[in-house]
Length: 309
Image (cartoon, rainbow, N blue to C red; front, side, top):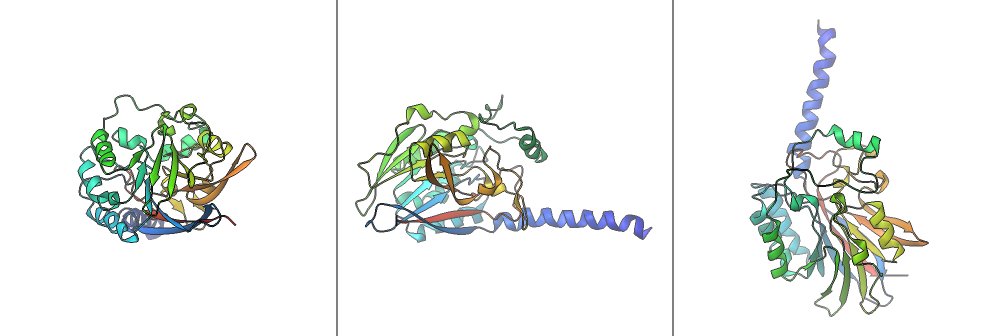
């Protein structure tokens, strides 16, 4: 009897322990990733860029809120928010409270699908099926019919009032405290087909100290367009770093058509005979219906931009 039931029971217990760890421990183990990227003109001194992404705030997530507030102690030169701030229709006040200290610094933002629409329960196995069938392909997904509207307008108003630059299918500029001027080109979320590259095409602005490209979901069509237009650095989020990874192997999915080798961190993207740096944030949250992280702790990134060699 023991031999018959011992293995299944042990496997069940192990599975329960992994879920408990992924939801109760790792999902709350916030970390700061540090990356150096040589993209500045020669002779220009270093700049510190803080990227926050995929907060997916749910009311009551006080540890996450306090951790985000603490990031202001890094004193970045500017902040880029790559979207999916919400996972709760009541979450806007807590997002603004969490980001309040960071909104004292120059910043810019794009939105993701979860800023616009409330999440719905989804079987996590469907992500693997979508990868196998190529559903995400080159086009992303249309918004779910009947999706709950999130009150993103109030969040946008607060970001704008703080001086953060909205980059949904538009260009903008940041004037840093040291006098440097950063030109930014952004897109609305490709994951729900809101990107309109034709409206921002044309490449970097040569009269700025640096030009950056910003988008929520790193779909290949977007990365190809930015890279072909010669942007030195592209910032994105969306992937959650795979969210549930296999130790010593890595991510199984990216929730877009980006390959899993570049699911998070700094890499290169090549298109049109040119090469750009790509930084994909693993983000610091998760959909409220799948609040787990395994072998992929939540994070923000401090990118030190240095002069090109």
